Structure formats: C-alpha cells, structure tokens
Length: 67
Image (cartoon, one colour):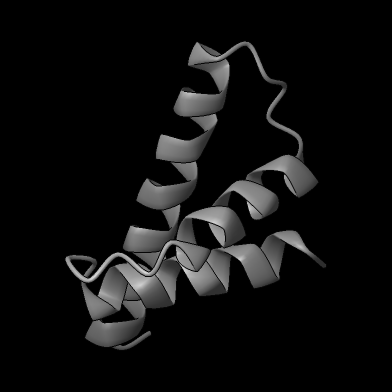
C-alpha cells in the first residue's frame, strides 16, 4: 500500500475506534449500522475545521461498514 493509503486506513481505524468508545460512553451498542449512521451524522454537520483526511476517512469507513 502507498503512504497515502496507509494514512487513510490508519485514520479510518482511529475514527471508528473513537465512535465505538463514544457509543459505549452513552450506553449504545456499537453495531455496524449504528457506527456508520454516527459517521454520516457527523459528516452532515459540515465542520469547517475537519481536515480533508478526516472527512475522507469518515466517508470511507461509513461505506465499508454499509457493506
């Protein structure tokens, strides 16, 4: 894999992990569809401070989890 692919994969893993821990803190079961929905909800907020890598990682992780 290329350096760019590695960075995207690492960011995807970090993002999904963050969502899982956040869901756990709120007592929500971290099912695949719940994680993907949380990512899509966060993406809909259009946070201008979000980096391009983070946005791509969130989008890619949601797509993978929707499979």
